[in-house]
Each structure stands twice: as C-alpha cells, then as structure tokens.
Image (cartoon, rainbow, N blue to C red; front, side):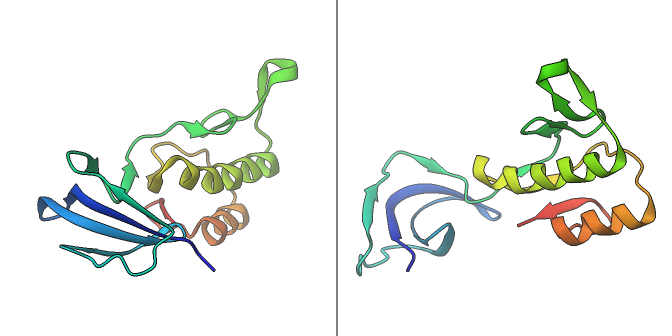
Length: 138
C-alpha cells in the first residue's frame, strides 16, 4: 500500500499559471491538485503556505548522470577515463534513464547521443520509453 501525502496551501506552477492549491500524492504520483482537498487518511499533512511546488520538472539539457556521459560513455574512476564501447554505452544510458526520476526529473530531452546501431537504438527506446524525438518519460 502506498503512503498518502497531502500538501496544503502551496503555490503550484501549472501549465495555465501559478495558483494556490492542495496536492494529494500516493506513493510517488500526484493523485489530485485542487482547492481544499479533504484530509481523508493521509500518512502526512504538510502546510506549505508560502512555498512553491513544480509538479513536473523537465530536464531540457543534460550531458548525463550517475557516472554516464552522453558523448563520452561510462566513467571509470579507477582509470580516470571513459569506456565507450557500444554495449557498455547502452547499459550506461539505461542506468542514467533509471536515475533521473530520483532527482525529481520526470522528462529528459537528450541533447547529444552517440550514434547507435539500429539494434541498440531500438533496445534503448524500449527500455527508456523513448520516442523518435529522444524525449524520455517515466
């Protein structure tokens, strides 16, 4: 069972602008954004008056994360360099795709990606839910 959280009175940045609202979340997903959500049975209630919340953060420029660089490959600290073989690169990209959500990022636009063979490019798309535009969502 997911824990429920209720954040009250926060300034929420939404596509139509900034407004004061309550946010209810279950687990890691927002279940409701509205005015005066009743407490129900949340695990935690947070009074966020005067605080700002951005429900979705899109990383529009990234070079990599978690030891992976989009242009250089996987960083190997023991040799102070990068390993960029195709299979290791795809594994590094997969690791990076799984790392972004832990930083609050919900979408990534990959600005530079090394050339893949057709097989590995399709593999990365299926693992990262990527579309042709290289926007990765989770």
